[in-house]
Image (cartoon, rainbow, N blue to C red; front, side, top):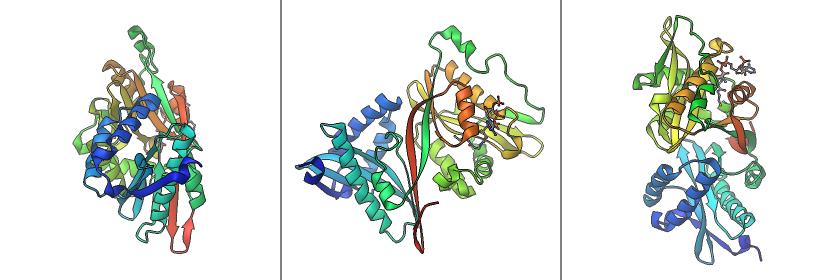
Length: 336
Ligand SMILES: CC(C)(COP(=O)(O)OP(=O)(O)OC[C@H]1O[C@@H](n2cnc3c(N)ncnc32)[C@H](O)[C@@H]1OP(=O)(O)O)[C@@H](O)C(=O)NCCC(=O)NCCS
């Protein structure tokens, strides 16, 4: 008998944070080991939500023992699969349990009349590991890359990081400035315009509206879900003639010595002039100077300009994962 047939799948809201804590601690260990991320601040936030018993989701019990969980969050008519994780004696069995949990969650969401879109991006799982239930439900899959840059280990070699000593001069009408709270609105406008007709706006529909872009920014700057915002290495380029933003790079601390680039974009009319490279190099140099040893980021595999930029600056592919999206229409379920 396989593990999957002995499982009981129950409503997550019947379980307390205390009961789920060991599983979440185990997952945090895997995040640290595989992606160098310290999942602790996210775990604490998740535990608070679990205790308020409002997260829709499921747990798996194997002969009465909690061995897995999954949940989603609602954003209006959209559901985002937040996480799915299971433990078992064999990795293959853990994936089977994760798949069973996801299949229950997707079934719930597909049959929820108020939900018209479901998004999922679980960075922890290699491409192909957990896609079965998504593909059976009709999701469209977008291959993505988790990339990493490791700082030179010898302090003197920081000088040899990309761009050191060769900083391009900006046109006099472009000003480089640090992130401040006054950037929210122009930065949301920049994100919204930068991702028009962009594949990432199919993966994350927040990019498709100004309101959504503002919400995205608040999420990464104010809340610890994707690390703690690192204002000292987050930069904007302002066009003084129009008082609009031409580009920006934002990053967060995801572990004591690891940073994650949460956003980099340059407005269309300013592209191909070295601004993207300059922003990223400036951010990398700040991070090196303040003791960070590694930088991570995620990028859609087909986003060639971005992937080339990251490769050129010394980022390497640490692993491949998939984003999954399902759009429901009145006529039924569609891919995008
Ligand atoms: C990715 C992005 C930030 C690059 O900004 P940019 O200012 O145009 O980039 P740069 O002019 O500094 O170019 C730097 C390098 O990027 C690569 N690049 C830039 N545009 C490119 C293009 N159209 N095709 C292929 N490579 C390109 C090249 O490697 C280039 O180096 P080179 O000048 O030696 O050829 C910009 O295209 C953008 O904002 N895209 C939309 C948002 C986005 O995809 N963000 C990344 C999400 S992960």
